[in-house]
Length: 419
Picture 1 (spheres, helix red, strand yellow):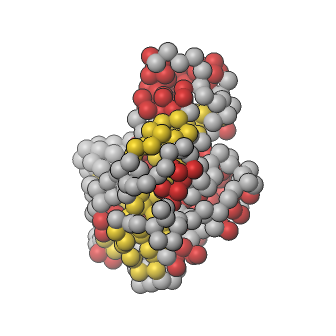
Picture 2 (picture 1 turned 135 degrees about the vertical axis):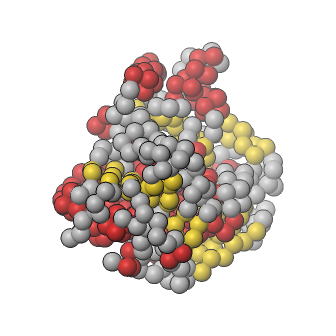
Picture 3 (picture 1 turned 90 degrees about the vertical axis):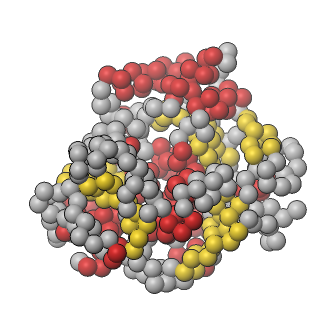
């Protein structure tokens, strides 16, 4: 039978025949991920299973990114538990401190995921790697513990929604805007336990970093994964990031989809997701007179070098509005150094921004940018649930780095076109 991308990847990792959506198949894993929040839980379950060692020390990835640099005693203890486990198991890919970045930016950058891989992670945004053509999904820490021990796991074959982006991208439109528009159209449960497969003529305009951003937020539509075919852009990215053996992968002609969603981007405005759900998306022109106290540019969604460049283009020669704190967090040490080398830090600091270390930090209400009662933030992060970034009385708006940076300058949610 012709396979969707999700079916094709699962088929490559199982000895069973993948026949239909809803089927349960046992698969061999390419990699298993946990972080400083979920790692200790997975380690506890790993011990309870009586496992003596991880299935492959080179394919277990432990990234201390959420509360690091450690913000308090509890977070320090979380890291200690995971560090000791990594040492005991001789885990090759343990990241902490100066070599640590936000996990979903770090793993592709290090060449640890590639097209056709099957990756699980104890973090919901593991689906990011679908931007490279990998079936990647977030699971609970107990399932991840089983994956660390066995190197295999069962999966229910998801039905697939095909998303076709058509038309030429306007100047200030970015991948973030496309995924916010899609979530606005289908809702936060529109792809529940389904694969989102992306295609269409606009694909040729999207670089790999934009695709990683789009796949990252598949989970905000309820998706099990978000998948792009790999093409020459993908292979070039992989060659540049320690994965020279990457292969082309695409869905089969005639594959069966649950539905097809078509979105014309030609005249699309930058999008803003308003509180308190990612599906509450509007064109930026419809978000009027919303003042902000904080702007966050970074995260596993939009902390890559292209995002830093977008923000700098808007902020260059301008100042952050008085009373607004603008926090810029490059997602990995490599991105941090590249941004500094390109002079982007001078632009940010001249504008009055705070440049911080690679960390998830404020995205999950961890640290380095917590909101107080009644404060508003526009962020390039991926969730705006009530209380996500601090106070239950605060509001979080989601947007691209271009829109976030423009809003930092005006102090009001603003389209970059207005500047």
